[in-house]
Image 1 (tube, rainbow, N blue to C red):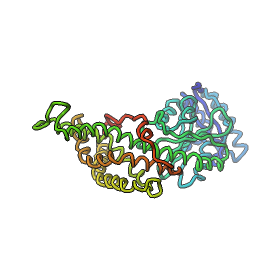
Image 2: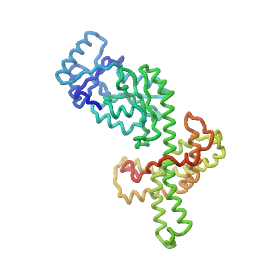
Image 3: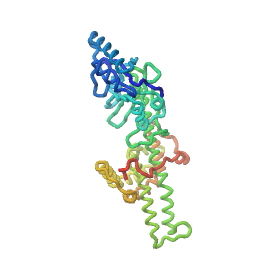
Image 4: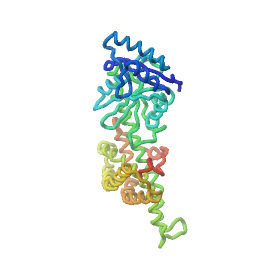
Length: 396
């Protein structure tokens, strides 16, 4: 990443604000002081602006800025593009649904780097955020929770890059295989908005759909071996080849440990599967006979809703009133939650492959598959780690 000036003032023009200035660099406070001394007014988003409506005033402001920048050791850079905040607003107004656009400023490099972990991208946007200086960007949000990042395309005098953040339920986005590719946008807001609406967003929705399917299947695939082992022990009445389970405390402990582990994984099913099932249309697929299995899966989820609500209430309570529990206490909470959904787990393990082929066929904007997925397709994806701990210390 190139080293930017220690104190930099980046100028662009805005139809709304006139001359817009952004203070950047490790010593951005010096650039900010120069702008204030030159008579610029601070905007709510942290940028500064001065009117251009009156030529004489504009010339005086420009002259004052040059002198104050010199006094404070700040470099002035004039952008060939219009103010990015205006461009973001114009694109947002042209996207389907209700979107809002907000300019964010990253004066120092590590502020920019803070975004990288949340980006869900396999294209130029992520590479730019990693290797180029990006002093500001626009966040685009809609009512459905979709969040995009819009930046100026580096190395060019016009054009932009737009890509997606991961949804809130995901925090492990680095090299995630389903990540959509960011899109290069032209300078014209109308054309840019059409490209986002008709090219990027459909790809994003398909990628998110497949990521959620993968998340559900990974959870089931991690539960399955332990479930099979436990069932075999219960049916045989023996642990391994010799140890009988009669009058032993071993089996209850094994069941408790399984419930603890199973909950950590199955909560991904409870979180993601309902929306996926809602898209499934077995009668419109090559496998109408799957309707009965999907009905069983829906019933299993419905029977787990009280436990899921209990978990979310506990999580909200712990966030509101931070508390610490021992590892043993957390394990006990998880095992109780897991034990409550064991019948649902058994149903999902039995009908999981049926769910997957129906969910794949229900990909948004895609075509229904012409044949069933092969067993290899259902099992060959690398399994992601089902958390052994927690995303935060407050979540059981």
